[in-house]
Length: 221
Image 1: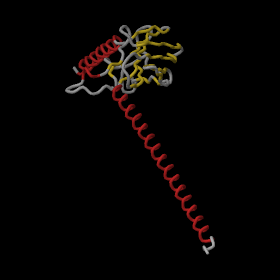
Image 2: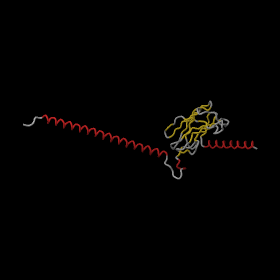
Image 3: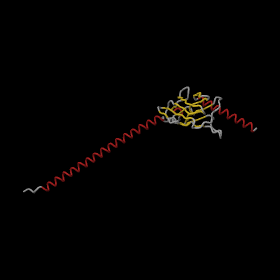
């Protein structure tokens, strides 16, 4: 009885894993790289700005079996969005063969998208002896672009991260301008004080010279 229960649990786990992989591939673009199929996309969709996410690459061999023996040094991904490009990030395996936890053939690079719009993933490296150099951009037929999370915020929608960034930059610019103006006013006041001291000192010298001349002048007859 215990044996049957154990086999049933394994079967249920296998079905769950298959469903998980299928749902993952639905939100990804699948490419053929030599004898391997590579599914590329986000771990979580919809993809919300400011929320923890990750670039996900799921690899299978020509028989449909997951490729789980790559290391974090084998695959890299560079992300391009909002006119900026990231440094190369390691795609690390999530499957642990010792515990059986994670998804076989799944490789991820954590990322928090901070701007709405399209994202491009450029994956390079090797799958065993097969080089990989694949690029994909978010679109209707690939994976989703990042969006602001206002639609799922309740009861009050928070300001968009891009708006907060813009406001902070403007406030910082105003603070810098005010600081510059204050420094200029301070410098002007210092210059005026020095000039006043110089003029006052000159007046004292002129007065002293006049006093000396007066003291040396012979008394009137």
